[in-house]
Image 1 (cartoon, rainbow, N blue to C red):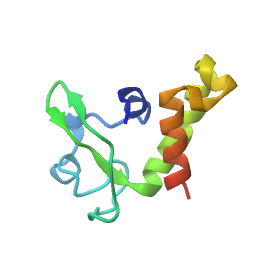
Image 2: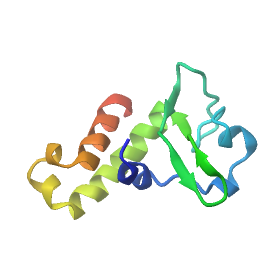
Image 3: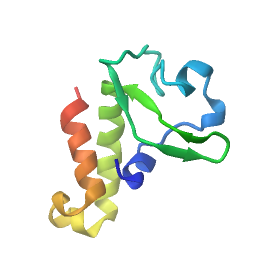
Image 4: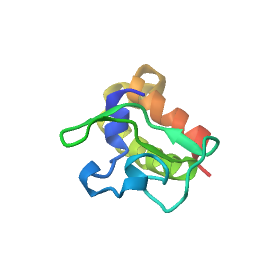
Length: 102
């Protein structure tokens, strides 16, 4: 996942996460417990406190976050205005919406 797309999902501050969220056992945004089948890996993220970590969330939360981020992104991105497929960030967010939004 491109770092720009990950940033647009507005991850919570690592320092404010409880242990289960920090290790990916619970969704970053809701109380859903994650399994290998339900977890969506959001790629690698670098946090000043935590160093490298690999946040995870449930599909519905990822879909909702990606949907909101896509609406914000396309208003500020010239290539996305013409064709979202021309922008790696816009394309990634579009794919996340299509896959996970319910």
